[in-house]
Image (tube, rainbow, N blue to C red; front, side, top):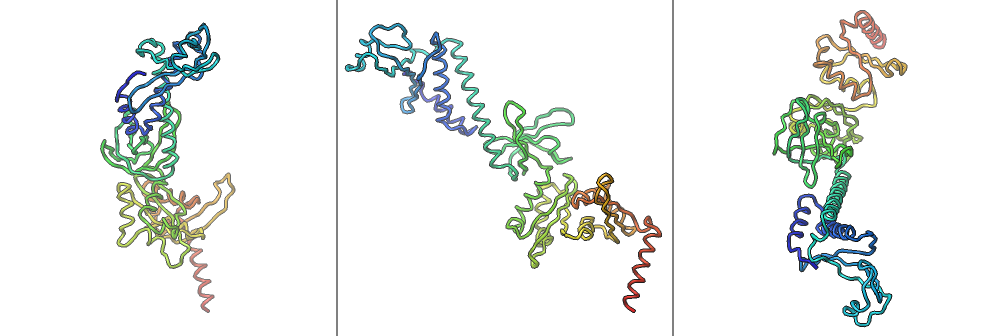
Length: 381
């Protein structure tokens, strides 16, 4: 046995702290590497049953190989003489197989090639262990919110960079497309992210996290709104343009619960918490309705809606379409800056939405109003 001392245990403890690889697992990698180096030393490399043992109490490591007891030795790597064997075990007989220590006086006897083999094996095993750790962590956190600290910024080009977030035992990568537009990320800042996917294209799997994914909004509402967490209020749909605006449709089967009020909270405290997490992104909480007219009208909030006409066009012409008429002074509000309000409403409701003002609708709208007024008068009469 050769005394290695405390260095191996110290290295094992450090790996367990930094990469969460158990000490005994790392020590087994070292033992396997030493066996591999020993086998490289054997001329025919044909040595079965060889094992290395590390004594944690003494800090010693040794190599043991099975050898057959023979009268006359023809292969030192596979056989031991009867005379030599009886020095170890007096009553041993020819033909028995003994496990004999074959530890060299100095590991340098293995040579450069054997040492390189051992190093490669340890590196490979550590990489495999790290891969498994990352995969296990991803499976445990997939589709959830988590808080991490920005560890570094990897600049890829003038317009692209990766934000590397320390998630505890593993790192998460937030690529440019998953970052909030206009947000400045600094090393040391704490951020809340959504665990999105596992990318296995590189040498080591990479956990991709996001601050731009719509599901981050769902997770935040579940965090801050108990009625969503316990299922009293249900999130039916989310439409988001990260960093700018989000529309979220909510519903409750309980007639005593106002789903919109539950999400906003007393004096808006709940919605303010979510907005703060999203760096002041504007959020519209919409009441879901099974009636498409009501749902579309709600989705276009805060604009006031005059009428909604529904059309079931053929798929090649766009499918479900809603023609919405709003007062002239509400047109720009209904459309939103750059068309954002109507675009998000269309995503939320899954209806194609065309908006016109009352003046744009022209005579057809005035005729419709007159018809409705006439019908109302007839009913009153």
